[in-house]
Length: 250
Image (cartoon, rainbow, N blue to C red; front, side, top):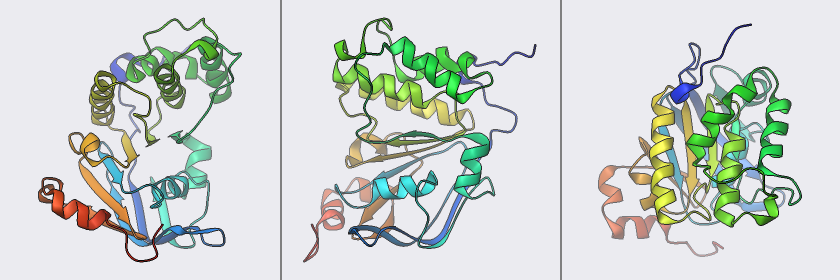
């Protein structure tokens, strides 16, 4: 039987995934027009970390939903490894930690990890130790989830998302519930994970938390995407002007 090496998050031979968005408009126009992203174009190379920052309700989660193939673009196109998101997700899987995800209280962490690996199939179970390491899960896996703290639950959710070490990882507010030390550790692990040839896109409303690890930082504000330069990140007045709502924004 062939073995799968997951030691130190080894890169797979075919792990290169480039993501290209061309002039896309996406969102829920009928219901939540304030969260629409309009005419955005960007390219994410494999092995990089991209940060999506912006105010709450600016469209970060909507854009991640689109990249994951959960909602279609209204216009323009998105491709992952040369494939539409839905096709890529069905063939290869996409790791997506959505904001506000919950877990069944009666289950144990070990039970959820086992179930997730079974759902993924193949050799997914072999990725569990690496997923736990990357997520910083260092607590007893036998206790019911209802006994875990908020930070523990968040780390468990990240570990579940990392099975089976996806080539494309989408994280929406992954630091929620983590203490300062755990946040620093997570950023370092995200950086190392990407360096193995995988693509990571992280969404947050906190610019400073991501600027230290991101290769590119995009601000989503008022329906548009702006590529932030390093000089922007060091100028509070520049960030305030970009984040400031216009008349009629919510």
